[in-house]
Length: 160
Ligand code: CO
Image 1 (cartoon, protein in one colour):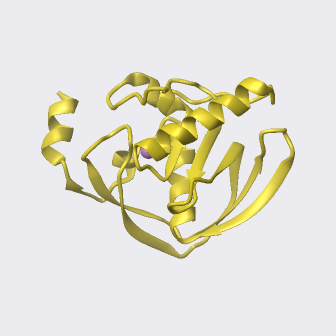
Image 2: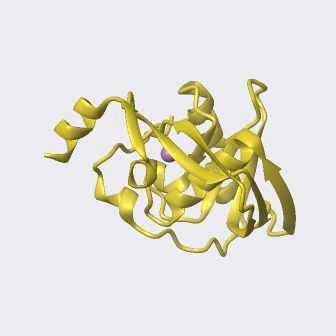
């Protein structure tokens, strides 16, 4: 099973590259990312978290063993309405913080075959998509957190 890289690994700070090859490898990567995510009880995972610098992310759909893959996602609309919620990240275990994000977003993305789609997301899905898309740009939730609610001590020790 693929490994998740953890903060403060500098790879998490890189900007991922656009996916151009919609091949078998890409499908295998998405599938193994999804398996990893479910294994760790995550609800989203971005390729840079598994040491792959490509613009690809998976989002788990509740507790069902199904997931959605977003390739080269771009947010085309952020609602003015924002909401604060507590976030965590598989690359920052045991650390949680309050992050303010748009309640609704519109996203344009490609599927694993390269077809372009548009989606409107709200609620938890919108939050997860914004969090995962940040990973593609080297941004972590701790950069945006208004407050660290759990694991400040862990974070302090990692920063040293
Ligand atoms: Co994360």
